[in-house]
Length: 336
Image (cartoon, rainbow, N blue to C red):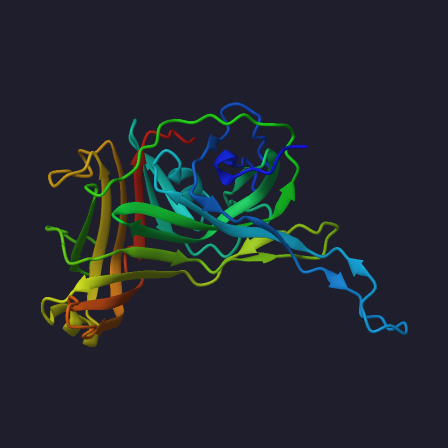
């Protein structure tokens, strides 16, 4: 029996499924990638049935296995060696271009579900906890949260999946050096809403940046001889952006009160610096919101020694002839 262990010895592997819901073998060569994470909480989720039959006792006395699914967050530092694998497994269209580094351009779709026999992409996720493997299949990302933590770009992918299996065998992790986006990598640009915003100059009033795209996914079970979920359904896609802005003038406050719409881009590049461009970078991530409305813009006086700033929440909207937002990832992975 192994000793109790710490999370540092755990590992996560991700492989894109050829057929959605059919688990990928983590022991096979060249079919997936070992992905560094900060933490995870993928769990088997089941509402067991406890029989309420009356037999002169005031306590349930029987339990029946019920339908189940898998869900939980996967939290990681953004590294373009791994991000495209998860981008494929979400409610997006992914277009790959370039000859290395490769560019993956990701836009939201209105797909209703990962219905059996459809075209949905999913991933199998192996989590090794204290040398014990948990293999989850039919996994998709139900919500994305990209945020800057002390200047470094992180992401939390909310995972929802169909089933759990026991791995075929023990898989041996392999790692490469981290390629992270540091504090000199990231810029924010603001422009009027439109299909082709110029984003001519950096906006240096942002004290933080959190972009979330919630697809409101839910596991669905239908009547058949299996307890695993049959597919994942999607609801309304809700893109939101939250930040805190230095309050320098009433320009953006007036845009809030008049519902003027804005385009906003977050861009992280390697190598970084003030002269960096996406075209010149070897690795990069862009998150572009083409049409956003201020949902909240709260400016107040916190205290004598505090900077005057505005707490801001924005809501992403659709745009005629285009898409509400776009995620672009540029890096070495060659996913076919």
